[in-house]
Image (cartoon, rainbow, N blue to C red; front, side):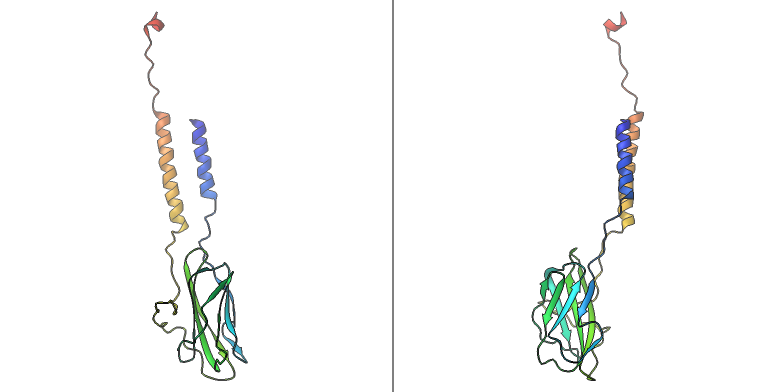
Amino acid sequence: MRGTLALLCAVTTALVLTPAPALAHDTLLSSTPEDQQALPSAPDEVRLTFSGPPMDVATAVLILDSAAEPVTTTEPLVDGHEVSVELPSDLADGGYAVRWRVVSSDGHPISGALTFQVGEGGPPPPDLEAAPPDESDDGGAVAGPSTTLAPPREAVLALVGALIGVLLYAAALRLRRPRSQHTPTEQEVR
């Protein structure tokens, strides 16, 4: 029984000292064009590069012109760590906002926004602090940053600690239980 208790203590120590898995979601590493970049001419596409490969589910990239009107683009293409949309060839000079949403490789949605300017002068990009347009049925618009309800590491450790405490208590009770009294048989008495 002492071997079982020692094994239980070793497992408890290993669980407590093992680092918790990372709960971080993928992040946007870079974009083409870059955030707040001024370009002499219109780009052919908008390309977003993430730290992990986003899932090809509910991906949305919405380009807004300076009047906050959507610009017609191709459907978002997910290729490895990148998401891209092609822009129309007749993109006018002015400011543009890019609102994006992807499902992170850990299954949680992440979103963000950036701006860029095409040509000299022209109207500025739309305000990113303003509320985004309503979401359409095809997921064309992108909501603000998402929040997740992943349990904090402390809560998981407290639950594991409580479970281990109950197991240790049960083991201690078992060790303290007196062994059954042996009643001598008639042959042993003689």
